[in-house]
Image (cartoon, rainbow, N blue to C red; front, top):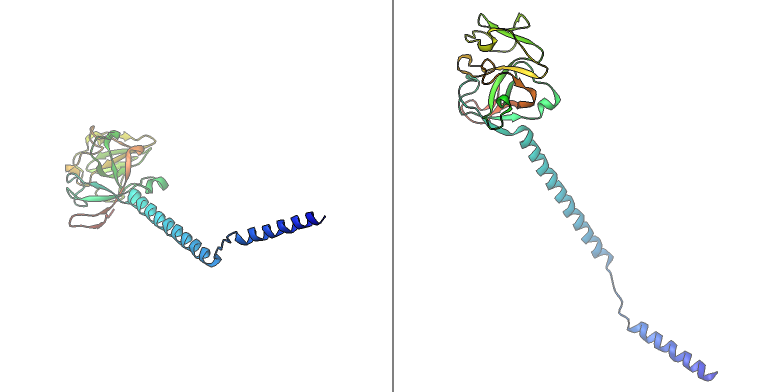
Length: 211
């Protein structure tokens, strides 16, 4: 019995010595808390920067697309070489209306240069140009500007009935514009309208485009 007790005592002593020799790990809770705050602040900053970049990209994509006006077909509102900003978002919310200045590619030809013209007639309407004036469904049009003194009627010398998604566009400089009055341009499909011209960023008349 004594031998067993002696062995037990020796075991206890060894266990105590082993426990004393084990290194203790200290985790300063205060320092760890500071590191976590830094991580949170860094993540928050990254999210804010990402959101700002996304917002800037969206603004440029939907409101800041630039298109150069070729020729004087929209004079005096726009001159040759004027650079305009195009609102690509507006026609997702509302339909183009008479008097809007729209940007499109004729016939949906992606290789063609963008054209900028004014909407004269809307889907479902019948347009005709006679005696220098625009007639919509048999009535003289008085909406908007530059709707009179049109010498060249082109295809609109006879009534032109527009389809469900077709628009008839005319340049403000009637005698110097290739537009829906010519067979080369023709009527404009809704799907081919890139957006609405709304701001001039170059030239003598910098600013919002007057309708």
